Image (cartoon, rainbow, N blue to C red; front, side, top):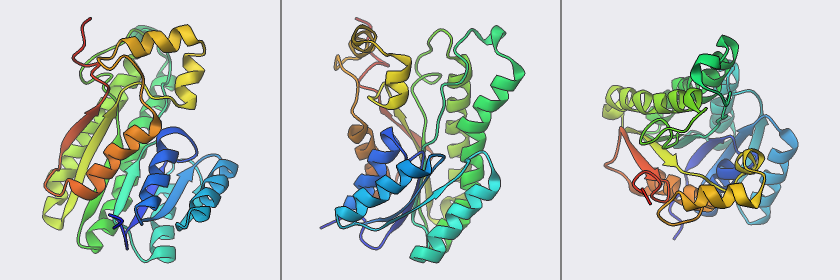
Length: 253
């Protein structure tokens, strides 16, 4: 039996990578899915894929740093599918790749806007909709960077993504009585467009993989399965993190 029959989910950053895999997996498990990202053509192809597999989906392209877009995604879920049960705020950017003392204020603010403020804006509109259905799952995609480890030149990325943990804890405490569970999945290196863009050679990709205990990087579906667990099975889990980093946080060999 499909785990999410009768449920409705929003997935942002759904045009590729972890977000796309998550949207497809949630749909395969019976959820109706509202997918969001900037690239409308990629969203349209995702909706077509989900529908070809027998699922239900609709798309809305936009900028997650704009509050009106966060509100519009929730409104679409309610108007098209009758409510909201799961929200996966998955958008992210690496931001400037330089030592923090060399980061401009504009780049710092942009990184925080995409990685942290967008999650706040999403949650601001998603939580009331989740509560109206008697509760649900609110999930952020963070990273182990800035939580269990740091890398040179990724200070802004780590700071902005680690802020999701504090955001999730605050939301969990504020809205637990309404049945809203809030958690953060923390992936390691995953085979996405962004990963390949910043690690374009086989040598670079292999080096990153060898940093993990599993000696490889993740596939997007592997992270999506962790999101599904938090959405469907972790019914007494809130305000916490789920590391999906292949053991990079504990590997020292």
